[in-house]
Image 1 (tube, rainbow over the protein chains, first blue to last red):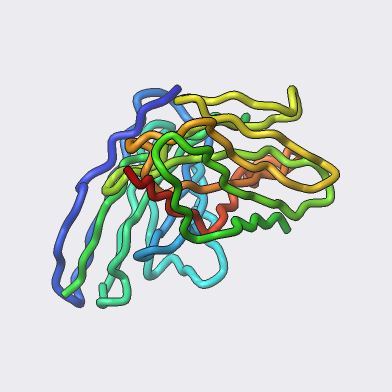
Image 2 (image 1 turned 180 degrees about the horizontal axis):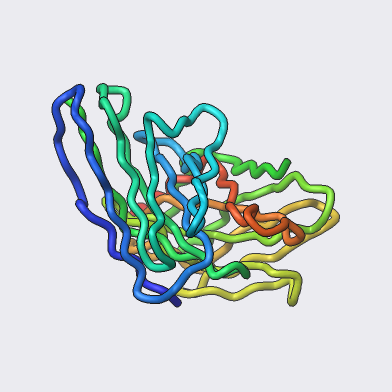
Length: 113
Length: 117
């Protein structure tokens, strides 16, 4: 199955700044997903990223806050913009080739101070 | 919409005892079902998955799960717990008939497993 390299693994950021998280897949995947995992909570889907089209955002998440790029079938980025302490969380990317195999990145632990 | 309920946010077992983590799904058709494990500061690792083949699914590290349509359940079991099994476990579901662009997984709230020596 595919392997996803996600970076940075962790960061501490000042409020009001932005952080871009990158996920690189070692093989082509049809769809990529971005999740947020708040402390002690489950995974909440932020958006689905498909190559060549705008990401599809879930309710409660907007493009201005979480812009996503998907320039090709092996790479995606998520930016957390204008950060506040409430954005402190773990962010995970995931990829699938469209059947029932999913691979996850190791996560980015973000702390906003 | 798909949903998953994991009973018990925290389960403690003794080393060597049976592990049982519960997962119930809500769906009008049998979905694809997954169990993932998350160790501290790591991503998610697939333990096993049900994709409408055999109802008893065997996974890694001696974990297994049985799909029971009548009970809408997919409980995870392991005969003998090891200290290394201490982690967070997530059940997830996906509609097998979802069209292109709808392959996302829906996760349960997770169950933290503690293993007592």
